[in-house]
Amino acid sequence: MGIANFKRDRKKTVAIVASLSLGGIILLVVSSIVLLRSPEALARQFFPDGDYKIYLQSEVPKEELMAAGNPLNEELKQEILSIDGVTDIIPSRHTLHATIKTDIYQTVGMCDMLTDQNYAAVEAALMEGTMPKDSHSILLDYYDVLSQNENIVVGSTVDFYFGEGQSPISVTISGLYNSGKVYSGHGKMHVDGATIFAPEALFHELHPEITSFDYSWSIVNDPKKTDYVGAELKNIVASHSNIALDEINTVIEYEEMTNSLAFGSMEILSWLVFLFGVINLINTTLSNQIARKQENSILRSIGLTQKQLCKMNICEGLCYASFAILATLIVGLPASIFACRKMSVGAFAGNVMPYQFPVLEMGLFILVLFGMELILSVWTIRRQKKQSLIEQMRAME
Image: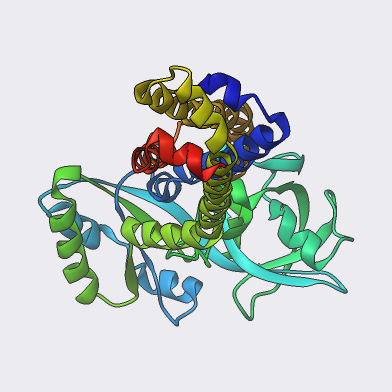
């Protein structure tokens, strides 16, 4: 009988199930995306080797600082390696500040050296053209070029130089790459990320006086001693000039804030939609009780027990909850997998990350849904018990 009541008014049933499941679908999609965009996973792309980086930070131009004696030297390396918990130091970037000019266009940015360490990643990020095949070929950030000058294309010749006061040389743009797939830069905003890549020979040609172009070191550390290593690195940075410490926790905090701003409002929206569905269900339950008062009295007068009436109400409520959850999974699961796939390609350099089902959020959704149905059923049963069969039938006369 509970199932029959559930199917009695199909339009109303569909409306209630749809309103309940819509909130669940939105919650499933948003929660899946948030789970995919784990702040730790996003931050780890910039810290593939350890939890810390040491990099140059000075008001002195990088080429002058390096020519006078790069602060990232052997002495500093040994000092860092002496820290308990540091297992290795990996030069992660070789960089100078560069300028590119044409008759009508000029851009400045960080130019990273192409090395064995980053060559494959840059090649995978290539959108047009080819990798440099000689010392006078460079790569430009595709989006940086488009935002400033659409006339620069693969094969264009431009003037190029490092720093101020240097005579420019002609170089050819051999390719354009997607900087979003090459993880460089320091700090939470990565403002010093690479916008140009050039062969090592070009660096030595323009600045033969520089012996070390090291701009950033990745510090490989024992995960169990992360806090101690961080404290010791801060002491070292404080005692040296022209260097700074970059920490993975800084990036994690920023990504958490970004996720909260981007998806927090959507999660709130999903719960609001679900709340409207709950209100709709409560109103329907109340109206059904009023409309079925006489019907229930007649059923009880011909032998329907109080226990059977309770089972009927509970069964009807469980049907609403079950069909809402079923609709949420049938529609929401494919939608969330598709959304995560698209988001994964953009957030993880074209890589499709494994889908993770948001167990906690959906478990809470199911708990609230069935809990609400249980509360409504208990309330309905208690309300019916307050009146005897004779009182209910008299009220209908």
